[in-house]
Image 1 (tube, rainbow, N blue to C red):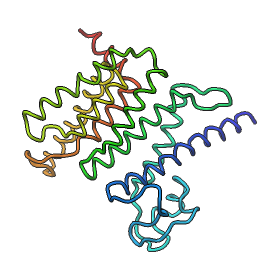
Image 2 (image 1 turned 60 degrees about the vertical axis):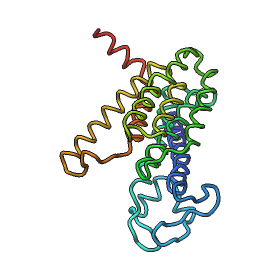
Image 3 (image 1 turned 45 degrees about the vertical axis):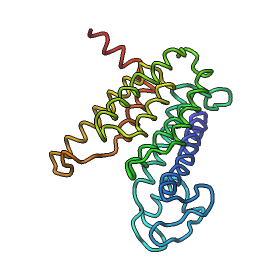
Image 4 (image 1 turned 120 degrees about the horizontal axis):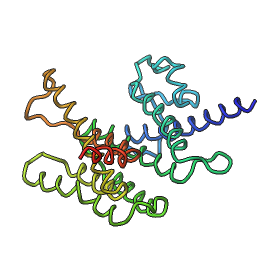
Length: 260
């Protein structure tokens, strides 16, 4: 019986994260289109049919409808399902990583980590579609950085200030020297994230981002889908590095330094 209740609790935690990321799906779709993210009913992007409550159940509705709109039968992008699935996984993972408090409620550190992953997810998908990273996301990460001063006091202020500059400043200099090297949104993303993460984790994050972005670029060049002078959105790869760096950046830097 205890195992059953425990399973239900984990399922509720997953559902909570999926519901939050379901809203992030709305932000990802509406923000670039200039639509309000708080007003207006959810609708099918193909036929405009207003979705009912049972068509808006995170993850479940997509599977139940077999990835198609019940109104026009058009295929629904699997991105919606993937983002909601990621939200459920992130919420469970952040809680397991930072622990649960009384009554099984996720800790404040876990909530901050989940919020950061949510912002990174929106940054990644919007930048992939539009090559734009909105300042509201930088502000959100900056606020998380301020809150983290109390939630993660082991990260010293000096480490945070160095982290805000150690990657962003070279990116800015390179962008001024080489046109199109980095976008302003990428630079600001690394600056505010550096304050949140500290210099060790932001260095690890940048390394992972460069590795992932470089690998993608080489693959696209080989497949003929990118030319040498073409540009691509770097934000998704930075977001990947930042997410990994947040949790394991210290260990990755320590592992690297052990070989020196």
